[in-house]
Amino acid sequence: MLNIAAVLCIATIYVRYKQVQALSPEETHIIKLNKAGLVLGLLSCFGLSVVANFQKTAFFIVHVCGAVLTFGMGSLYMFVQTILSYQMQPKIHGKQVFWIRLLVVIWCGVSALSMLTCSSLLYSGNFGTDIVQKLHWNPEDKGYVLHMITTAAEWSMSFSFFGFFLTYIRDFQKISLHVEANLHGLTLYDTAPCPVNNERTRLLSRDL
Image (cartoon, rainbow, N blue to C red; front, side):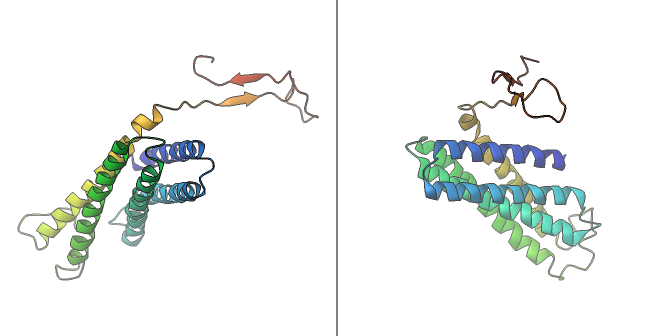
């Protein structure tokens, strides 16, 4: 499920990158931020795949590194996109989009701070050495409250990511995507290209 989610996130991040690129082709600072956002987003998706393939109980260090990439780079991606939204309003879109994304970024930041603080205390060694391998928690266990806060904050961050992607809905309604196949000859042999009257075949579902 997480691997599929990572692929879908990559597609969303790339489409957003191309959209901003098309809307602001001559704004140097926006172009740089847009490229930075693309890199941060792809790193976050890579971290999500690492989290999916290296479980906490078997590869704790690798799992934690994946989580840091996912949440850390993902939070920076949201921050960069919010800055882009600020710089693109009111010429490209209204102020409402910026304020909504800013609220989601603040939500993500509060969740991240809560998760980092409580997880640091939980894994400090004051609550035993078997915390990493512990799967089932009871209210009377040491560190139960910190564990619950950490878990809730982690889920809260995840939902903030989903919420941020939902703000793209109206933006993506303003664009359309298609794939084109250009024929360079009448056969598939390795011969010199032979143009076919510049014919282009559009690979759309209704044409197949």
